[in-house]
Image (spheres, rainbow, N blue to C red):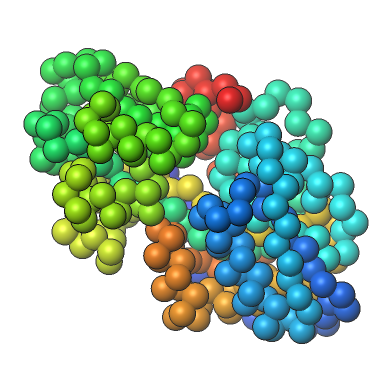
Length: 323
């Protein structure tokens, strides 16, 4: 389990979207709601609005984004789990809401596998390993050597318990055989601010939260958690180049209530995948630090099924608790 990454699940997905039988048989007759469990203006909300705009143009009905914040995204998730399964209520889920929370919260009023129908995997999100310029490590290998020589001496900032930054750091510790002192903040932005000032030593940051600082030289990028280098930062190696086998990516995807008609799921999945092939949308997603995907409902269901045990193990290893 410790050496697992997203690669096995991803390798099974032919991401080039396929036309799905019967997809055109369903057409919405009124506006569709796309719920988001986080505040307006964040990357998840922005992605949802990009997808909603694209769907509005192809479905012939408005797709309206509705923010229902709170409980780590669980309020929006529960609303969709309890909604009528008719294709008119969707949620922009994430690794956090539809994998982490199932392991993190002991008594959720829904189950992310039983009560939702996967529609399409929208995007993957790697992390960028960045250190303060004062840290005497200019590569992942040097960071590992430094951390081994000084166990617990390096302070690693995270966006809080159970966040992607937290899990990425825990996975790195496990695979490198090192130990950081983890410092939790209320979000990734405060962690990055503390890194820039030098109050902490390193962060495994979502790309969008570290890209500007890395380009400005305020932090030093040692590696990215993708399987290959990023077109945005081609000079930055993958973390795996210094720590073989290490990859980490969180994700976003659209879900409907369980029991939603296959025709509705198929049409929505097809339109989302088609939208994510468009260069303009792909460019906007890249600006947010995401890798656009687009998949069939079946592919996304297989992907999520593989994610649930992997993420549950990360929760166990990390000792994450609800904030």
